Structures are given as structure tokens and as C-alpha cells.
Picture 1 (cartoon, rainbow, N blue to C red):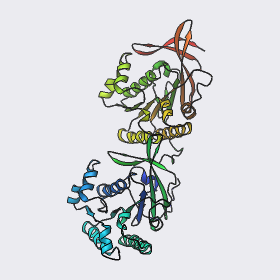
Picture 2 (cartoon, rainbow, N blue to C red; picture 1 turned 90 degrees about the vertical axis):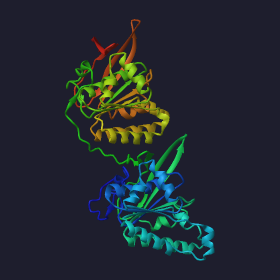
Picture 3 (cartoon, helix red, strand yellow; picture 1 turned 45 degrees about the vertical axis):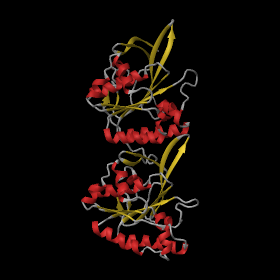
Picture 4 (cartoon, rainbow, N blue to C red; picture 1 turned 120 degrees about the vertical axis):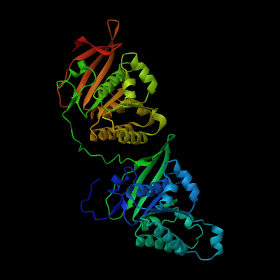
Length: 476
């Protein structure tokens, strides 16, 4: 997504995480924007967040004119998201108006036009000195009109009037059967059109956003997933990442001195990614815990995603082998995020990852195991999601460790998570669980490590009450 340096169109920041990157700076200043979509896709919330963030972050007063919900209903609905309508109204930064539309009354009064609305809207804008306006939803406003020629004329007049007033306006509209909106005209007279979509695929719900058009500006053209949580809407422009991140020369420890010594540099590069593969029981999670403790000893924060164990179970299991993760949690340098992969779709997981990265700003991220993601997506979807995640971590120069389950046999590496990550990972360590002389032997082999020499030996190790211990004899 290229940035046009000669672009002269003035932009209004949206206040919605990730959206300004997609739109190259925000919505067109002083022009109408159409947000359309089916019921439940987040249109009203989208418009409300734009309005509230404009007031609280950019000191731009706003007007919210609703044709469906009353002012008291709107206030109650958005209090749960921290949008305090009453305070904003008391500070004279927000004007909320509910325009009641009754089809029977419109039919009784004869020909219908918007002159009354213009007067009412003009008063609201002037009262608070509004720079942003929301009209929610347009269908209700024209519910009593049967004359299509008059309807189209009034829509054009409304959009022209908003432009002349110099406000950045969001108009929400229900999606039509054969057009973006029911009337089919709003999308043509709007300067910017954004389509929201709410879909359910294999019982997993996903919300997505697409910029249909944006006059006078370059913009992202892909579909972008977005999430609605207690903080409102967040959009992640996951398809716009570039290979322009920096690479550090600083060396950090893996948490195991013997493993560090297997690298010519005495450790791995800071901000690099490490992949641990192996069958069940090869100690992938234990190595990940050593990695987390190494970050803690450097007084760096760690974000640990666990897809198979609860935080309490992980702490208990590691404590039995001398790895005390509790002290790291008490110091608030370790945060464990545990959930089943089926909790949400792949792109929603990616959005949650990104949100936590912004909130916690960790220096180390561990995902254990990434192979669990195959249960909620096909091979191509999992591969695409992991590539995006790794690029995000690279751009932020975060130390990353991924574990992945493999299966015995000639195709043990032939799974989408290993395929996706192995070529991108800077260091790949494979763990094995073999039987030698009627004895179970665990071993480790460094498959690759970019930018540094490393041991070619397969190193045996045991699990003790003090963690992993490497034996002196190595199998070549």
C-alpha cells in the first residue's frame, strides 16, 4: 500500500485503531462517509467511536442524530464501552438528538422533504460547534417516501448540504440486496464508502471491513478483519506489512547455558524468531519456559500464549522441575494468555495478539503450540496468519519463540505450521524422543540458525528437578 507524497486531500483521524493506516490518514475532512453493512456488523458502534474519539482525542465536537434509538438508549448501550455520553453532553462537546420517524405521520402530511431536518441539524451543529456528524441510519429517514425521484433528489441535497456545512459526516446504511445500500444512490454520492461484513464460517464468527471507494486518495483495497471488545473497534491491516524491519546485533540467552554454547555467538540474536519442533513429550514447553525465565532475568516483559494448558497448570508443571514462573508473574514481567484456539477465528486471534502487543509492549513473545491453530483453519489460512504474525513481531523487534507439534514418520515436518514458520524463523531447533538400548533418550538438533555458526551435533538431554540438563556425550 503505497503512500502518495503529493496527496493534498485533508484527512480527519478516525480514532479507530488500524483504520488510519488503511486510509492513509483517516476520512476525507469536511466530506460525507458512508458506512454500510448488514444488521449486527457494527455500523453504529463504528460511527460512535469516530465521534467520541474525535471529541476526546482531537478536540472536535460532534453531533449524533439517531433515527432509530433514543438518546437514553444510546447512552446506556455505549456506557459499557467507556463512552460517557452524559459527560460529553454536559461539557457541551456532544449533541445527541433522536428524530422520530413515523411512516403514518409522513403519509398524512403529504410530500416529504428534508427541510425540517436541515434546520434541526444546523441548530445542533452550531450549538456545540461540531466538526463531526453521525446520521444513524439513513433508511429510517426515508421510510415514508415512495417517490423514488424525490428520494434521490433529497439524498443528493443532504450530502451536498453536509459538504457545504464543512463537517466530516458518517452516514450509516443497511445493505441492499443488489447494491451496497437499499436505495443504491448513497454509495455514488459519498466521497468515501466503507463496507462492513459479519460472516460465520464453520461456526466461527468474523467481522471484516473493506474500503469500496475513496475519492482523491489512495487506500488499502483488501478485506481487513476487525474486532469489537470492551475498548470498541480495532482494525488490523494485516495484508500491508513490508519487509523493512531492522535487525539487531545484540545477543541474548536462550535460558540454557549449554544451548547458548552451541551457537558461535554464545546465544541468539535479539529480536529474532526461534522455532521448536518435536513430537509429544519432547520438552518443547519446558524449553519455552526456560526462554521465558531468561527474559525475566533480563528484566524484560514476556507475553506467553498457551493453547493447551491453563496458567495454573503451566505454573504447577514447571515448578516441579525447578522453573519458578510465579515469581515472574508476581513481578508483572510475565503475562500468560491461555485459551482454546476454537475460541475465535484465525484472524481474530491475530487481532488479539496485536492488541496485547500494543497494551503490554513485551520484549519476548512465546506461542505454545502454533500447531493447535490447524484446528480452526485450512493450511493456506494458517500459513498466511503465521506469516503476518511473524512479520509483526519482526517489525517490533520482539524476541519470538514458537513451538510446533510434529508426528513420527518420513513426513514429520510436513504440516502447515512447520512449513509456514520454518523458512521464516531465524533459528530452528528440532527435538526428538528416541529409544536407545531400551532407554528413552531425548535429544536436540539445531537445524538452522541464520547469521551465526552453530553445532551440527545432536545433543542429548534429560529433565531433572532443576530443568533441562545436557549430557556431555553428543550423538553426531
